[in-house]
Length: 288
Image (cartoon, rainbow, N blue to C red; front, side, top):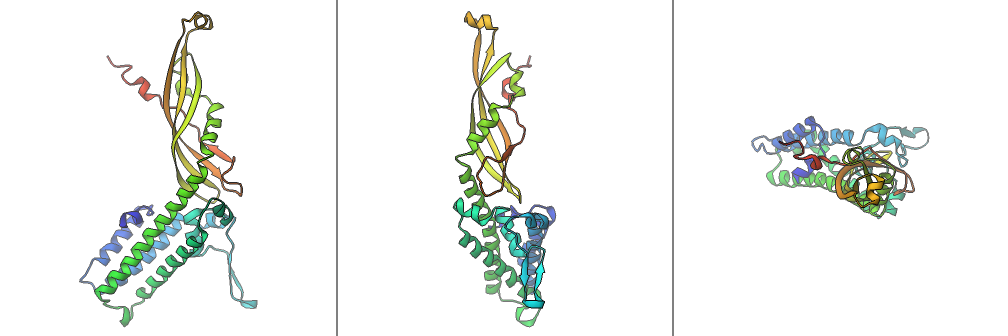
């Protein structure tokens, strides 16, 4: 549970603040242990939401709508994202509810979770204002409250991971085809240096993983292999059956970026320049 929470802490400051929060919780001799824990965890949530959900990126999302409060002349429009907006962005970036529904994401479950984490943050606020009723809290309340807090933030990580898994599933039927299209039209410089000629036989996508979702793109790390036939011999030599062919497979890895729009998963994507890894071919080549 605690290890899961650590995975969304991106800076050393956030990690140090989390460890200090746990230290406060474990200081059984301090009558303010829960108060200190509540205050520091609430502040930690503010910091990691800032890093996971930059305000400008949230505001760039198609689904973002400024919050309006009050009525009539007292109506106030807040241009900045609310905490709810930031939690939503941290979970699925710029993906709209329409796209999420199309790929099978449970919106009701998401909304219930957002409400629960907002409720927990609100509950933490109760302990940060020191009054007699929240001073020297009994051990049972400390344990129950801290467990609920830690479980909720752990579920936050699980919710992000679950959304990433659903997105990966949506890419199952398209990502291999997209990589094949990309591989067919590019040359592999590392393979060029192995033989006078080569022919591309196949491109396999072995595994891929969503590594980021922002307001515009879904980034996917892709690992696979390139199957080729290395060819030696001139045209006349090969015609006389004096040529030599060797079939080889070389690994590759790259990052694909899928544009977020209503047609996702779609053909709007970019592939970072990549090459085959031929290092094993040369292993021992220069040894005495």
